[in-house]
Amino acid sequence: MNRKAKMLLVLTLVFSLVLTACGKAKEEGQEQQQKPQAPAAQEEQNKVIEVSTVVPSDQYLKFDEGETYDKNGVYDIYEKDLGVKITNKWVTDTSQFKEKVKMTIASNDLPDFMPVNATQLKELTEADMIMDLTDVYEQYATDQTKEFFQKDGGMQMKSAMFDGKLMGIPRSSNPLYLQFLYVRTDWLKEMNLPEPKTMDDLMKIAEAFSKRTENGKSYGLAVSKDPFNIDTGVTGLRAFLNGFHAYENMWIEDGNGNLVNSDVQPEVKNALAALQEMFKKGLIDPEFAVKDAEKEAELIYNNQIGLVYGASWVPAQLVKGAVKDGKVVQEWGVYPIPSVDGNPALNQIGLGADEYYVVAKQAKHPEGFVKLLNQWIVVDNALDPTDVQKEYLYGKDRKEKGSNYWLLSPVRVGNQTDNNGDMLPKAIANKDESILETADQRTRYGRAMQYLDGDTSLWWEYLISGPNGAFSIVPKVKEEKLYLQNKFYGAPTATMADREEILKKKRDEIYFKIIMNQVPVDEFDKFVAEWNKLGGEQMTKEVNEWYADHK
Image (cartoon, rainbow, N blue to C red; front, side, top):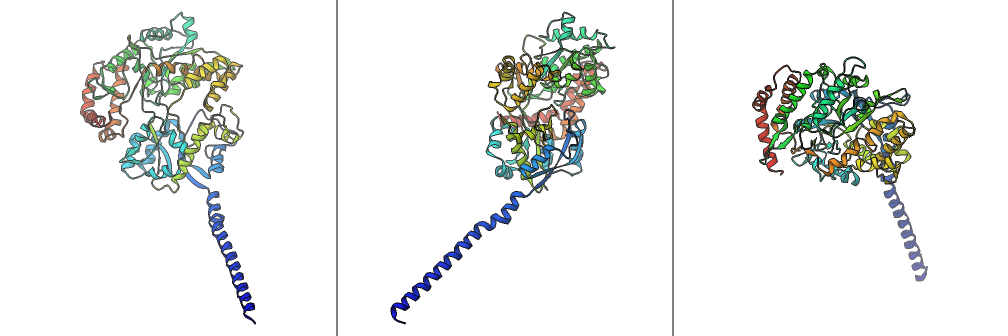
């Protein structure tokens, strides 16, 4: 073989080896690219993770046929869309839910996530029973979720932090959680009474209403057994206190730059004296102390009471008596809180976060909770929900039918701001939905229009969102700042965590005795002294130490 032929053979062999090597490298490269994606990534993508929680059953939720709290269209769509399977460790009636949560914590039998109050958040943190969510939230929360929780400057999120660690996610809401006075306007007309603009007006109306004898004994004002609790959104007395410039369990400024607790201020004594006088006159149900809100509301349904304080959603409760056999048989109006003097009443408001979602320390998939949170924020803030998103709100048929399927979403947070009062009354009055900005507004608008078209079952929505509804009062409250916000928003102090529940029970005991005329009004002064001795004085000191660093 000559030299030229040898060179040709060598070049051919080299070229062949290069092609083989390139081909092999290409195949290996393709394998390296596909290997992690094929079994592992695909498996991860299709993997369903399971998270457990606890659920309060809600009287306003109506199930589609064959569905339950444990098996329903909302849980199914979360699993299908997010790969998050939701299971319930237990379900209990709303009235028993908080007590059951206490028992769950005491037995250290936590689900993967659940809602707790601020004191429980602190206790669980100190007991090392819940997870630091700082990194999980940072990794899995979407940009939309992170922006959502910063609309108030991050105050609600800061309230869930301990030593720089995020130990819970606020069940956020608009801090302007106002209360109103609801009055039977048909009775006002019947008895030629004025609309309630002052506390004196209210007293006259209550006395006149108590003298009606349509269905037996009547009373002036609806009151139930837990009237000072923020959760008593109907038949409570917080707004009544506000009418006397008194407030329930708030930290307010004393005029000298310090904070004092509202429960022991002299304005409360004035309000209690007025309630005692109403009780003596028979304007308050003598059995209120043993009746829950629903039991007391039966007197409203039965035309025995025509005055009630409560939240914007109260008409959804009143409808049970207001609409019978397709006809509106009770006419109600909604009014701002009347004041005892020439100064306007200020609606007491909080931070907008009274509860927090916590994740148990042993939870295997904390990211599941954050994914549920992300999805709720997307769905709840969609102006025009897609068909799939409608499943989260209405169930598998994707139709709004008043069943409140959205209550099945195990993670729900509310917007820290809303403009429902600016938009809905105007849109409904003009029958113009083009100005509406949120899915909630469109849903409410649609229900109000159905009522105007003859669907009396939706009477309640019109009293909430219509031109003279509860929402219509809010813009003035915002514009004129007719509210007073709790000045303390930190984690419960040491004494607060230890003594606050005891102090509240002592407070309710003496408040009730005064209202029911079992002790003189001056017993309030003795209570104030005892409150300070039982921990109130120390608690006030701790709160002011916090306030000095947060002014």
